Image 1 (spheres, rainbow, N blue to C red):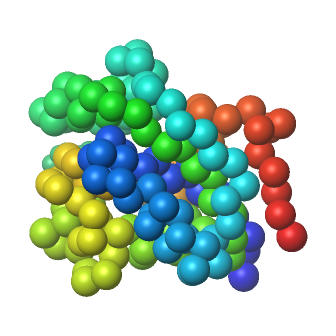
Image 2 (cartoon, protein in one colour):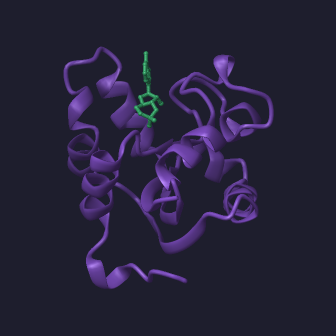
Length: 142
Ligand code: CMP
């Protein structure tokens, strides 16, 4: 098993619906450990930079508006195969396609307001974590 780190963003809809605790509890139950966490309000520029790979997609502007419509919680999770494990726990991007009991099936409102973001590969995780966190804000655990 490879110990990895991955980035989770709890999106504004899940915060409005009071589901921060439910989401963090689920990760802890599945043995992913929180090694960094902060609540922030993203600026337009910071959200655009984060989602830069989607810049040409038709939903880009709306996604950036949504991600800056309220606060988000940024979490670094650590654990065995954390990237793929988190993707399984989150479920499909579109909640209509998500498996029962996944975070998106439970807490999403729509494809855009889909409760959580998770890194889709190890290189993405490294980029995304360093986009939001400095090394001294991360606390690896045994
Ligand atoms: P996320 O995992 O944060 O990555 C990009 C986000 O764009 C995605 O979740 C969705 O919330 C949002 N999105 C909106 N429309 C689409 C679409 N048609 N395909 C993929 N992602 C979309």
